[in-house]
Image (cartoon, rainbow, N blue to C red; front, side, top):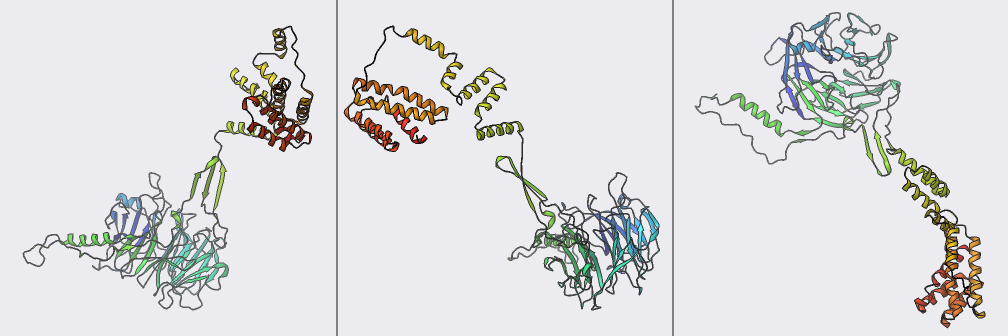
Length: 626
């Protein structure tokens, strides 16, 4: 979708990515005339303000020049007085001259804006490129196979990458490698591309199409893969983009045949290697995936050819195209609506006439009305795939249990000459610890539970207690896991067994109380129950189980007293004898069944003193398997 436009027949160059706000520099194009046949030339800088809804770009400064330009680039080498990156404008002129301009001085309105100038080239300078690793190095190409390497710190004396290629020919394109700083490529209209190694000061490989119809109009290195490059052909008989891999330089790795006529310019996005712009004589601007050949986006343009196209370094979704109709247009590949654009164009046309009467009718012109269309709104769709720069570089989310889930889409550095691999994305799950002391205490408790070391654990807590209350709490908890817990509970409460025993004896009457003997026919019940309790006590290891059995032995005295007094009903005594027989045969499940029958068929007040504890004894015996 079109965002801005400038009515200039000019070459273009975006400000470096570090520069803010975004500027677009234009220089009057060589060998082209506008509709007024003006021979004047100028260097102009515009500001890109996307918050302004109008199509016009704000002109920041204009410098009248005596040169017209074949190529214009904006390098990030120079700093301004505030320490910000203002860069340097490098222009290739008609007569073999290369001129360096100070853009900060142009914007400030100074008259002395030329930093340096050199006329060493023969013929027009059509190719320029800045080394992204050493921004003070600039490569240029002109006629007679001339290629120079310029050092902006010492602009008077350029270097050469090696001997001139033979036969001599024009240099139409030049580009530094995006991964290896000493590799440079150049191409000529004959279709031959040469790769130079500046360390060896010689060409290391030459690439050419065997059809001899490849008239090279564009050259670009792969942003990530050091050995891959693309060449564009402006020949209508072969309107293709060839992707070459220098490791297999006998033939192109891939050929893109999306244009119907010759291609005039290409630009490879540094922000997303899967976006390659191309414009051709078929009046199309296409954004393709060079790895698959698929057209991801076609910009809605007019019928004029575009001879130059460039990505904006700071805003990767923005691009600019210079066309032969004397217009530089700024587009976005993220789509949008063209209805507002049509209305702006109509308002601009209407305002140019105002309320004048150009035809002498005596009537002012009525406002221009756009006919209402019943068709759907003109929506320009964005790219078919999300571009790389809108992908989240990192992300994080907390989950239960102090877990932190993170992911990252960090670009892994590719090895020199390595094929571009499918990038693997990893998700990391980590434990976030905020209360280290709490986790340490939790681990200690977990270890105590697993090892059954409760007594030692409680003793450590008692020793570390800060208050008397806390010490007492842990002391009572410790007693639960010790032998003879009842006696130690009494000691914690301030009582001693010996003292209680003396007091009990003193409180007993002097007259000895004798109990009646248990009838012989019921004596087997006491013998059987007490023997079972003793067997259970011998097998039990848990202090709590032993306490239950001791309590049961004492509470069964209520049963024995009732047997002595013969106050139990025959049904209950008969049931108790059946339970005793099941104990002798060690059939405790049958004994529990009889117990349930007795409880359900007898008076609760008659059995409540001894039947519950008898059930406890049977249950423990069955559990211990005695």
